[in-house]
Length: 190
Image (cartoon, rainbow, N blue to C red; front, side, top):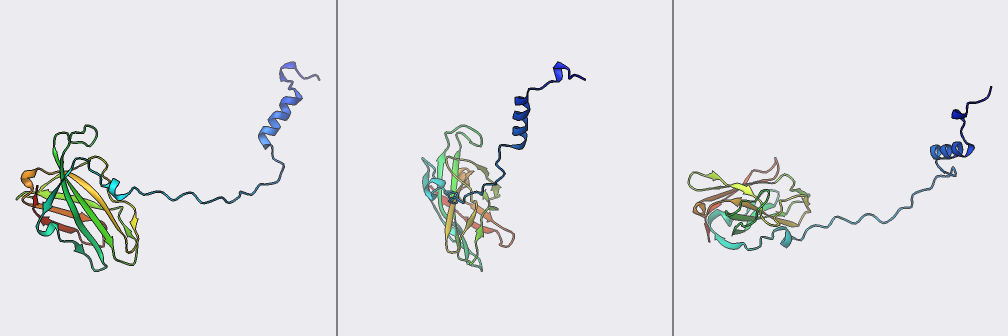
């Protein structure tokens, strides 16, 4: 019985489909040549991670200056406080507000890596301890990653903390479930 013309396939088309389905392999598998490892991720320099253009330093007194050191030799400190009037507009920006920027420093004196992925910072102010709203500013970065034994890392956090609340400031820093919250209290003087 003859094959209808609509079902006839050219031999070249059949060969092309067969090669496409099986691949154009010679049957030998090529082994992947090991190349150099990918470059390690570069960390942003600390000066860039804490950059706050236009911010002015303020002095701090009381317990804001005193670092908190735990039994395992991990230390948390407020290494600086700055303020700036925010003129930026965009997501997370509080335009026209005076922002207070706290720079914190973790020093890992323990024998194990310190995980900073869970750091939370809360700022309160005034006699009734109102919670200051966290906000973003410029290039400020939160803590992330780990810190090797013997190393330190800093990060800055911006808050909408009005200057009339500077007489009584409290900063709480938590970073894991094993260590109590580091509390810093004192006054800020522009």
